[in-house]
Image 1 (tube, rainbow, N blue to C red):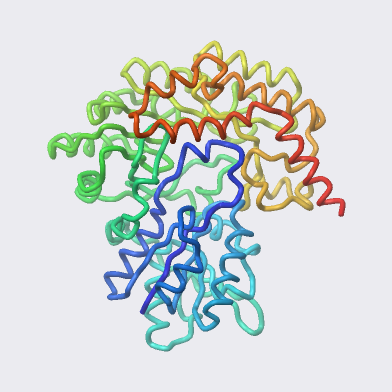
Image 2: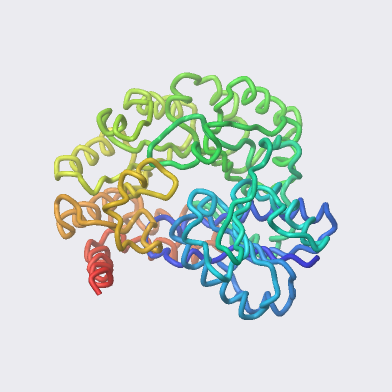
Length: 472
């Protein structure tokens, strides 16, 4: 069968670090590999690039269309895309999957959509395709939410979670046409790699641990080495919790060295307490890339703030992790959460913390209740009237304690103290010196877009516009 897998444009990228991060649709590549193994004809179209969906539908004429939904802000865009597909190909079977679809499927229950994947797509979709190809009833496939004449129903869940080693490595060739457009920070093109899936922790603002029941699955050393060896020179490891298994992490580092697999740049994500407790991990991994960055979720600048989100780690671990990583030559990128219930002193506490410890390479996002999280359930009453497109972690979803005007002034000031402010410590010329001549237009374009985050009026106009919508 002909299958078209779509990565929609998220729609709302006017704020935040979106311009700095555009990575390949790894989940679709995993599904694509599984379907190719079944003998299907598979096309992946990343709609963040040209052409538009109508062109892809004419080119491929698929019988089945899958649409990814990774984040809550994409719900409306995904439904709009599904409706466009339905109008063009009314007989096609349309399914949706991805992190946000699994976390909260109700916004996707639209007449244009036939099914929603409620578990890992590389296992659910091949089972669904096998049934469709034989002319069977989609409701016989596992882990789906199916649209029926009587309404939406769930099919039985997967019997057990599949070993990641039974999942074929991603079919990266399916996005070769877009490869030059995938980038992270100053590096392009960038390849996305997954070595493990899940998280055993319980942060209240995160849904990963709930989707996977606090489980943590790993690929074998051999499979990961193969994935590293067959990708490009700059990679972003998508694991939510890199280095979580210290013995395996050390074994993997040694296997990569033995295989002569070294990179120009690597970016990983992990927790501060993992680094602070096991510095030997960082010593083992540092030689594997010329530049090696770590993304850390600092979240708050006080133990009180961290306790409020069930982080299960404190400021002491954060600072020790930063010192350890820097001593070994790692770059530190992080993120802090800004609570709409903050007072002015909370902002100043954050500013002092960032300045004292040199954390200006951090990002600053609003504490946003994302579907599927404990925070979302607790905040349900405050979210009435909020639009999904505003769940980008940079839009206010309710009136902050300080009032919108003052809060957004302080929020913009927080961004002005970051490394992204080209009128601050790092000028536009400093940024340009870090990239190849061919990448100068890219870095100028990205930085031009991020400067609006330093302007409170931009945020405030968005907030007032949304207030008028909710009152209409």
